[in-house]
Length: 239
Image 1 (cartoon, rainbow, N blue to C red):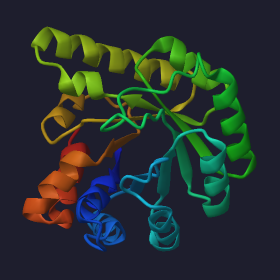
Image 2: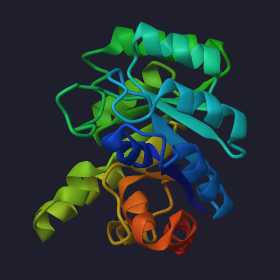
Image 3: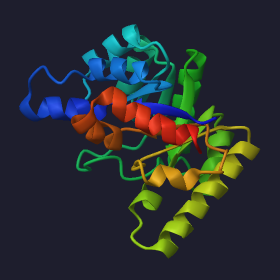
């Protein structure tokens, strides 16, 4: 049965819109776990636009499931990860001008950097995951540099405007998941998944974990975090 990792970044986005002390992403994470989340995800960006280092440190103390830290493979972020020791680090690309992560990390182009980060983290006992596009060569490279897991970028599928393009992008995800499983990588998926698009994965059992944030936080504004997580968890349990 697939698991749900809840990303609470956008609770912090709302907090930073007024640069005040609420809403509290730590409280949102606790509510998500209470409702059945299998993991909590935060992305500590170089520009600290939403999640702060303080948030990650408190989350490390209170999260009862698994804490997944998304980050760029920079020396600064590696040092923070080695100090805080999340359960999993997901390496992601990062550009200051983007609104949200726009695509997967190109580990063919950045093989040396990615390999060094993976080795450093694994030597510290931290599981590694790489956020990559559903490209078979990228997945083979993730295996080559000894990552524990991949997270398949689902954005192109979720944002597709026509049925043929949706079908094409979904096929890429399925083929990527099959390749990951064949190489004995943990296979996760995320980016842009909502309460409607998650249902496309029904009957496909190769995804171990779905990482979902924006759609859950958006629903939580209207229904509360616990109900929003329960609603998504129910849909995933029915896949």
